[in-house]
Every structure is written in structure tokens, then in C-alpha cells.
Length: 172
Image 1 (cartoon, helix red, strand yellow):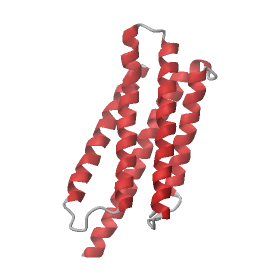
Image 2 (cartoon, helix red, strand yellow):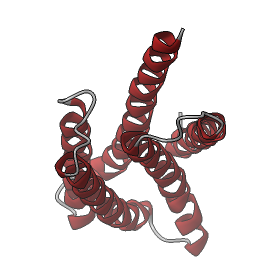
Image 3 (cartoon, rainbow, N blue to C red):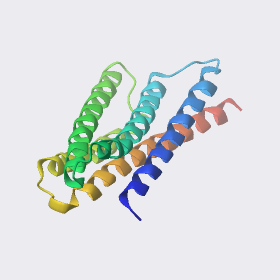
Image 4 (cartoon, rainbow, N blue to C red):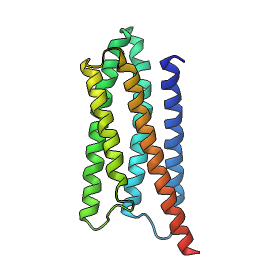
């Protein structure tokens, strides 16, 4: 399967996750209790990771329109991915830390750290690809970093849904 097919599939999954996040936001808004600060944080993780994966998956396809060599396309895409993922992780860790200091600790204690480590490692791997240290492995590492974004989004979504189900059961 050509790498363009993988990228297209990742973009399709990312659009689905972003749409599902929007659906959760619409349903949760109808709740009489409103949003808990950690719910907003979780939704930000889901949307940021899924929309980031979508744009980054389409980036190499757009760059091929310039007729650049494949190596340059994936190195440039890896550079953009590294900056995006690194910035995204830093912002989300900072926001999570502010919530914890403000009296809203993580509901699943190890989970935010695990997601941050997964994506932090992904950012480092794509930076190595952008620098040319990975040789011909740059495209698979780039695709792997996008899959890591999708995995992070799905895991946050799963935890979010489990927590919502627990809240609903307590009300019954």
C-alpha cells in the first residue's frame, strides 16, 4: 500500500474523530451541570490531536504539488509535525498543570503523563526525521507520528466517555 493511501486513511479517521468530538460537545452542552474544567481540557486534547493529524496527513500530499523529491517532502512535513506536536504537548501539559494547581487534578492520574510522553517521543522522532538522521525511514516515522496523534485522541476520547458514563450512572 503506497504511503499516500496511509495518509489519506489517517486524514479520514482524523475527520471522524473531530466530528465525534463536536458531537460530544453538542451533547455535553445540554447538560444542566455544564462543563467541568477537565472535560474542556479533554475535548481540547481530542480536537487538537485529531485536527492536527488531519492537517499533517494532508501536508505531504500538498507538498508533492511542488514536484519536490519525496525525501524533501517528508523531511519538510516532519519538521512541521515536530513543531506542531511539540507545541501542542507543551500547551496541553501547561494547561493541565494549571488545572491541577487550580484544584482540578487529573481524573485518571497517570493518563495525561502517558499521553504527553507518547507525543513527546513522537515529536522527537519527527525532529530526527526532519534533520535527516533517519535516512530512508523518514516517511514511516512521519506516518507513525500521525498514528500516535490519532491514538492519543482515541485514548482521550475513551477515558472521556468512561467518565461521562460514570457520571450518568451516579445520577440514576
